[in-house]
Image (cartoon, rainbow, N blue to C red; front, side, top):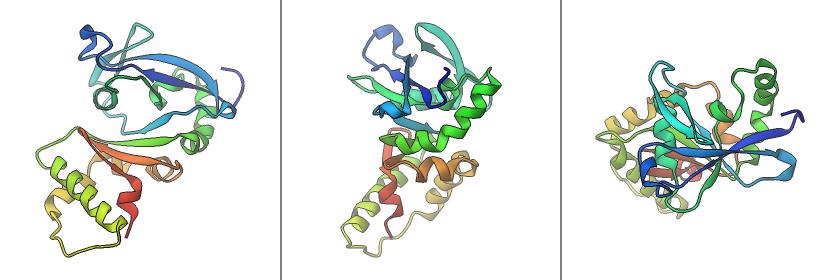
Length: 198
């Protein structure tokens, strides 16, 4: 990439594209520029332990990614139509220090241009589905301006809000800059607007 507003996006292929790929996320690289206003989603996540990796396919080449990124890609794979997604570990050439430098400088703009940002909190655990359902329901009620006195599942909420994603330096930029962002935990999703309505 040479022009300083050029970016790479990934076309994340549907899970039913090939039965052999049931457990391997597959994607293709798309070269574009922010000035072209591509419609894409962005991923905000914790990289995780580099020693704990899994295999994905990028342009039919086997590429190792952290377990956490693998799990996010598995959860976000579409059922039918591919999606365009920006993932820093794959869309920025991590071996090129010069590219990393100017791409990091573009990150706020990348997240701002994203149609939506998925904040990957991690796979579901024994309580996260109920917390995500509760937050979605609570957010819906708040949006409708009819809050009531539900008891909060405090211990489960504490468990969800102390996951590693919340401790990242880039969280504020990645989740507040985009026009449209959502949190993803396992198979459950909740929009940022539902979390921020008070």
